[in-house]
Image 1 (cartoon, one colour):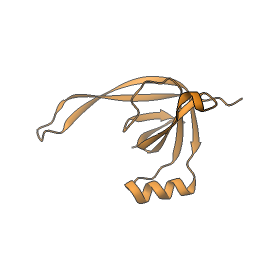
Image 2 (cartoon, rainbow, N blue to C red):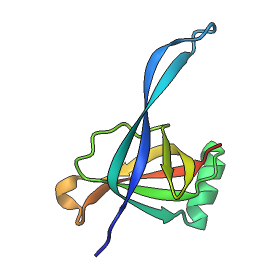
Image 3 (cartoon, rainbow, N blue to C red):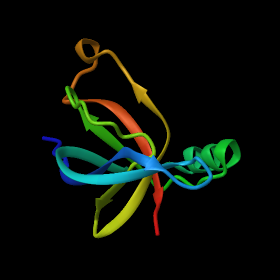
Image 4 (cartoon, rainbow, N blue to C red):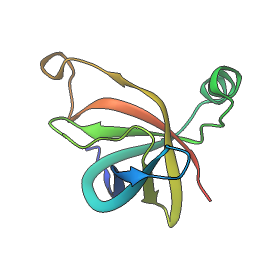
Amino acid sequence: MIKGIPVKLYERTASGTDTFGHPIYTETPVTVEDVLVAPASTTEVLDMLNIIGKKAVYNIAIPKGDTHTWQDCRVDFFGASWRVIGFPQQGIEENIPGRWNQRWMVERYG
């Protein structure tokens, strides 16, 4: 049976702007259970590097029904911090077997 791990997600909320008018964010940690983590393939790493200039390290699969915002957020797992990059690959929950229906890539953070 496939099992995910708990991942700490730092959801970002706009809390104001700096002197240049750029948004300032506050991070709120929340633990998300049953997240699958797998190494990114060589092709995925090269594609992300060529398209957006960031090096994908892992893919994370999010459980069905999750309502958290993942884009551009920090996540902690395996004793390290990672940044969610790119856009999700997502399917229709009813048509996808298993407990996960959304996949993101993460890069090393910090």
